[in-house]
Image 1 (spheres, rainbow, N blue to C red):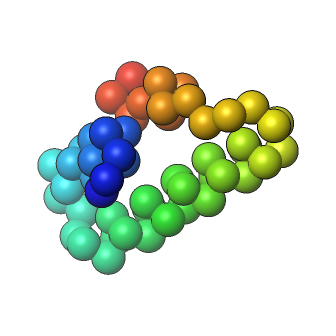
Image 2 (image 1 turned 90 degrees about the vertical axis):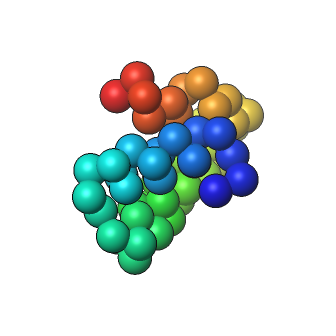
Length: 55
């Protein structure tokens, strides 16, 4: 992943034993959710709001 939050999300899933295609699917879903939220709210993307470490 090219972003810090995406890399942390991927690494967390891999550490939990998820396989490559499962991680890819989860990352696609996460990206779609974030994109929809940005489009719906009109608020620019803020990586600190999507920090997977805080979850």
